Image 1 (cartoon, one colour):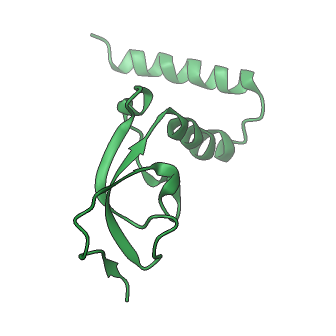
Image 2 (cartoon, helix red, strand yellow):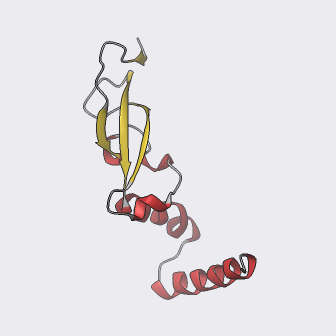
Amino acid sequence: MEGIDQNSQEVYLISWKEVQGNPLLAKLNPDMLSPEGHIVTGLFKIKGKSKKVAYAANVSYDREYAIKYICSKLLQPLGITKFNEIQALIAEAWNEYKAEHKQ
């Protein structure tokens, strides 16, 4: 039966790589770029455990996650194959961002 692990008081501390399913569902957060990473608390299905049960866990999302996210959600869908293509795109996006957020 699918459900939640209600027999354990344990809260797992895991990496985003240990979450079952699509690992790139978490939104980006600035803390992912810090040495400590960004911690998300919730119920997760964990690799190596029952696929039918969600466990209480603190999931650590780090710089590596942010890089994989950028590759999967930006570079690949846009078909970017050359570094200068992403440089030009980021430069335009940066200029737009700065213009919208003048202080």
